[in-house]
Length: 503
Ligand code: NAI
Ligand code: MG
Image 1 (tube, rainbow, N blue to C red):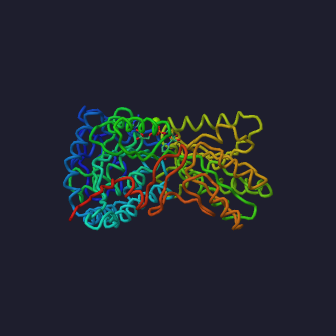
Image 2 (tube, rainbow, N blue to C red):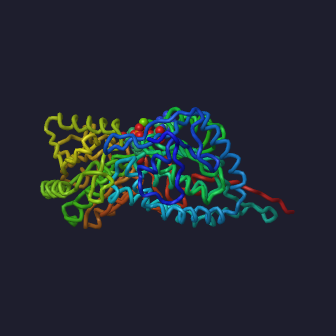
Image 3 (cartoon, rainbow, N blue to C red):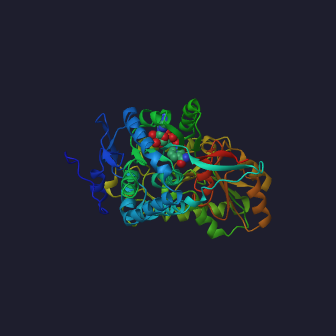
């Protein structure tokens, strides 16, 4: 690695290794790249080879204070800008991002191990889409007139909250960051993001590109570890709202800290999403649907992954065989190779966590692990965090593999006999993020959409979060909504009541 930090190119850079080096050791605060005040950094590793590809600035409370104070200063003027003008600038950020989509796809593939063709490029495209969607909503920050008395004009106005602290994970960091930053900015807040340790680079690049359009200080990003950098961000007195995506465990810590300051919090905390397959489904489409629903191309590292698949008994064996055959056709390999369908697990810690679940499943009496696809043979990838997708059968509903979020390429297939039985199983979960039902029977479809305990229920598809559709879970899956107009209004503004006595 070069001793002197490379300057970051303004032009799109299709060599992700060079771009990763150039982005090394930097936060983005107050409209410019800055190193960590402590001078410390930590490695960014390519999970396909184990090689260090960059360093990330290691932020702590001092960096947080610098970023938040700057964001607080910038927010005052930003909030005074007409809302539609703010929206127009966020929309213009999308135009600035578009020429960089290929670059961002390659960079995120390098740092997370997600395959470029099936996942990383797709994620990069969603960033521009989300910025465009929220950019158009400036004019929707409307208040109301309230009937009170003829000589008193009573109205409400939507005001921004101030500085928003956003903490994001590594699985789809560009997408999840956009879902937080875009509505927060359009609503007149400024934002300080704490990126995930495993994936600090692509989001840093996005922040820099958006700062070519935005006034300095309204969008800042720090890298660093959870407790040392994320913790102080949540606790900082000038942070007036926190939005978090990640684990239940960390979400509770964030919520407790925010409670001390009495500030609002949005939490998106994952799931254990059931997929229910009736025998009358469109068979081939549903088998393909199971593969996409389980996000096997993302190694199952998705909060809406269909990690519990219940199949009506008459088609169970046929469904298992067809699913395994389809998975066997998927190619595991170098994430940057266009032929690759499935890349790597993001980090050694995550790899070990998933492997331990697989071992536990294999050791369970009566259970069978159906290993699918094949590990890559290329010697350059021998240290890569590749893991064969696994379909488990024969697990009881009490198994940890059926109850806990694994966040890996592991799904559990279980036969069912009656609608009541499968509904009870589906709802017997601490989570409630997403669910899907696959059937051509309208009665079952409608009834299940009402009775499934989840924030998002889909019939004959299981798409990821989409701009314009409110997204957020019940039970341990979180608090609040993202991705929609409602999300912007309810979670990034407060309503002020104004009464003007005229008589
Ligand atoms: P995590 O919840 O610990 O990390 C998410 C973010 O929170 C990261 O930016 C991290 O630095 C930050 N963080 C960690 N501790 C913090 C603290 N004390 N204060 C403030 N911020 C803190 O998740 P992790 O460790 O990456 O993954 C563990 C499990 O969490 C996964 O196996 C998966 O089950 C779940 N998860 C769920 C996600 C979702 O989309 N809902 C995303 C990522 C992980
Ligand atoms: Mg953690």
